[in-house]
Structures are given as C-alpha cells and as structure tokens.
Length: 365
Image (cartoon, rainbow, N blue to C red; front, side, top):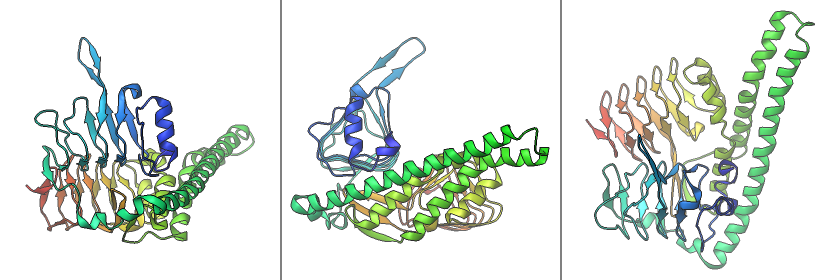
C-alpha cells in the first residue's frame, strides 16, 4: 500500500493508521515516497514538516544469536530525507537536517541540527542552497492550498491509472494461463507452450507499453521546478506505473534489455542487467557491453525541499555499475569506467574514460 499511496497526500493517513507517530503533520502532498520500511510502525515517529524520498528504512530492531531488542526511532521536524537512507534507533540528528542519499546516519557525538549530512561516513554540508529556495513562496499560504489541491486531483487520477493497469495486467496473466490449461488437450503442444509463455511475458510487455504511452503524452525533459508544477506530477505518474517489480523476473536475461528498450532506454548491444532499476528510461543512455549489477540504480532526478530537478544520464560503452551502486542525474560515465559496489555517484559528475570510482560520495580510487 505504500507503493499505491506514496507520493500523495494519502500516504500520511495510511502510515498513521499503521501506527506511525506523525502528529502534528504538515500536509505537503510529498511527505513520503513509495518505499517506506520499518520493523515496528508503533515505534516509528517522523516530525512535522519533514519530507521523505524513496527507500527510507527505519531500523527498530536489533537481533543477536540469543535475543532481540526493539527501540523507538524518531526523525526530527523540518528534515529532508534523501533516497535509500537507513535510519537507526538513536540516530543523532535533530531539527532541520538534510540527510543526503545513502548517508550513514551518525549514532554518536553531538546532535546535528540546521545542517546537511552527506556520505558514509557522513560529513556536514549546507542545509540548503539558494537554487532550492526559489520555490519557497509556493509552500505557504494560498499558493500552497491551490497547488496542493491541484496535485491531489492529479494524484487521484494517477492512483486510478495504476489500479486499472495493474488489474488489466493480472487479467492478461489469468487469460493466457487459464486458456492454456483449458485448451491443453485441444491444441497442439506448441501452441500450449506459447500460451504458457505469454502468461509470463504478456503482463510485463503490456505494462511497459503503458509506461511508454504515458511518457508519450507528457515527455520527461530536463527541468527544475516546484513539486506543485504539472511537470513533477507527470514524473510521479511515470514512477507510479513503472513496472520494475515485473521486470525483475527477467534479471540476468537478454529479455530485460528488450523491455528496457520498449520503455525508451537507449540501450547498447550485449548489455548485462542483473537487477538494475532505471527510474527515467527516456533520459538514460547506456553503451554497448556494459554491466548493471544487482540492485544498482540509475536515477535521473532528485527532489529536495519541494524543488524537483531532472536531467539526463549517460553511461558509456563497456562500463560497470557495481552491486547496490547509485547513479544520480546529470552524470556521464566515460567508456570502460567502473563504479564500485554500494557507491553513490553524485549529480553532475563526469567519470573519465577507463577510470575506477568508488565510495560515498564516489571519487577516483
């Protein structure tokens, strides 16, 4: 349900129903993304005015060979939490903190407030920059009420599209599978084999086509805008209908490359994809004979404090993106370069040809 309600105003009410302590909350329409994980929702709290991107994991439990312990996890008010952040019990952050993508949250030392934290181990950066403050006037007063109301209407349409297309996907699976079963003794074995194969392949192909059609209606372009701008709402719609959960069935096979191309990725020949996620297919280009390892991610956008930024990412021929590595927008990886496992390649980086980069944030090794 977090995937269904995420990136909308409904996610706050759903998490409260689960047991999260969120009151008093400031409704922004982007309070939480589509991926929020926890061990115990009743021991999870997020402060007022905090915005959370995808991939937040609240670690409420500690398990040893003999016992376990559950603890309360609390994120302070007016924070921004980036992608793929694991927040432990006892995290030493307070009010008005920016937690960057894949940051290692500190569990000792002073309580950090009014700063940004980036990297692993983390270091302090400015809480915000002037570029991200240009849309602050849209986050208060009448402008917020108008923008939020318009966004809510668009989000309800997106949720409807998601439910209808997923239902049609299940219908296609059931149709081909039951046809193969019912006609097993009437049709030649070859046709039955085709029907069984279509029951597996038909739904992903259909959902990839749906995603491509939505992109065609409102193509994703490099932009900087407010989260209350229609360009952002359409980007959220593309993320919502993204069939990545179905594509994982084809990890490590050449069929996944065909599906990426159907979705709009400029993908070279003989590319090996062992479980990558590409959030904006039409903004991503990958050269020949590249390797995308398990749980690697190419994300051509970021969203900080109500400002949405989106740009292209270019991965050259013969490149390797390691297991769990994260590539942000505006990146160029030169031919034959390599990004080490669990690294975070920040926005706008230009990796030279044949170079080996790693770390969080990534730099030349």
